[in-house]
Length: 326
Ligand code: GDP
Image (cartoon, rainbow, N blue to C red):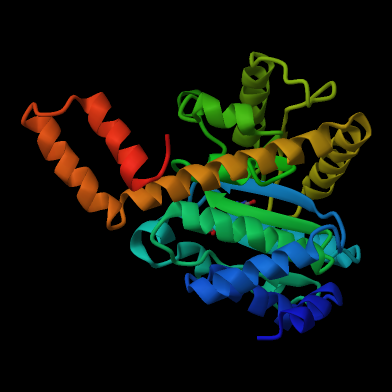
């Protein structure tokens, strides 16, 4: 594959080139990895700075409906929108619920939109890396907004928050008891809570739920990266397209404030550091589970069990003799 040609075509905003490049970063083949790295390095600093928006919410809360309505609103304003997904179920089962072809049908036909479902990989770490790299590729291809979607379970939310400039949490109208079901850690990551389905019979409940969340947000510790009034809770109806324009206004004003105050760049820098650390840790762990280190570790473990070596001495021997580390 001619990587320089691919680079030129991505920078020209060619969608097919972008799709091919994402396939390349998803590949586990060593030669593909090398090409992908070469491409990503070559694209660094080119293209445009997209607004990366993370979006999380439990299944059924209305994520795909929201993304479709919101995405169409943005493309109607002339913006280019990419949608990526981190789907922990695809990491486990190899089948992606976020890859369902019927989702976001209208948006997927929009010339200014690009939708890419979550890849099926065995490890969430692999999915995260691919999504992060795909985000860079979308940015290079001139997308204005990259939406990164995830289902609200486990570690996937932290991962998405670590690759977005803004993090949205989509919630359903609910009684007071259910409010407490949202984990504090996830609330703390969110910049804007969107209580969806504020329409018809659910509208009153949605407004009450929104007020409850607004109260809960006020109890959180103030974060330096927030202007007055953030994080905030709002109601929307993805189905009826109400509140979405206002939500977009809020996202833009928050992003602008963070740009002006340096928090935007600082967050990206901290994220780059986070992923560097994560990569190093992951690769070291991967070496432990591969031969010959794996065998050596098992043999040392037996010696430890038999009382022939202390755990510390065995660990030292493993690192020194088998990983060439002090
Ligand atoms: P996801 O699993 O989070 O992607 O949720 P979906 O977007 O597939 O929506 C789940 C269900 O909720 C569907 O039946 C949608 O039609 C419905 N839904 C989504 N948004 C709204 C909304 O704003 N109002 C109402 N009343 N229903 C909605």
